Length: 138
Image 1 (cartoon, helix red, strand yellow):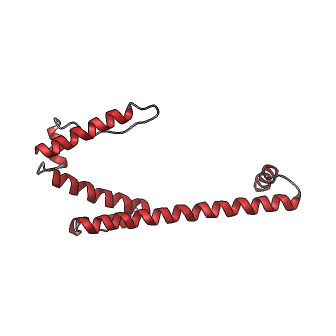
Image 2: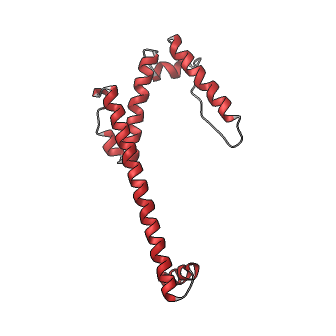
């Protein structure tokens, strides 16, 4: 294993250890560099450059899986993409997820406003309306 990769792993493990000392905080750490079986399978060349590329491809896969679907993410050949293309792909997937999150928040807000308006029209409070609707559904 290249010294740069070993140093990178040790630094990440130290960061995780320090971060996890804070109350209510937890951070996972990478497998220790002495686990050669794991690292030989994970990063065959043992270089930091290969490790970072593998991580970038995996990040792109998981961002696409979260933003769209696993089948969509599996349909992309990340190995043929440049680092810049992968960075852009990740950025776009994250923007898509943020857009969806805001849309769902707006939908929830509108539903709550409509519920409050209906309750007001009926001269009751929202919990009473919710209870009535649950009873009606049952």
